[in-house]
Length: 163
Image (cartoon, rainbow, N blue to C red; front, side, top):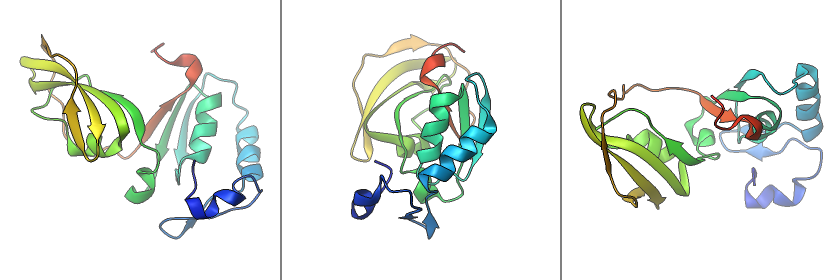
């Protein structure tokens, strides 16, 4: 699932394979050795630099509490979109950057409106647009601060919801 169709037949070989932006994946044995060298035991917060298509990020998420991953190529960062996004701050609309980070059919919940008067709204991504799918719940939230954040956070299945 991390490779283009043309390279999938080689996915289980221990090779570095081409990916977009002139980059190459790590060979799986090297990714495993790097993770082993970290000595993770399950409670760590990990920063990964150079996400690529997210293969090593997925491995890290299986063995660490939290993973923050940085990728300089926006095109590569889009290969591992989120299935769900929850925003706990109000904005007049869902920021386009969040829509881009959401996978097709992905769900997003966010307070829409001004912080002191907003409605918590559920959406599903269809194509490049969000469709409202759930009823709205009136609430008060702080306002969302708009600025670019250059990392992705991945949580381990073991600690989901424990923060």
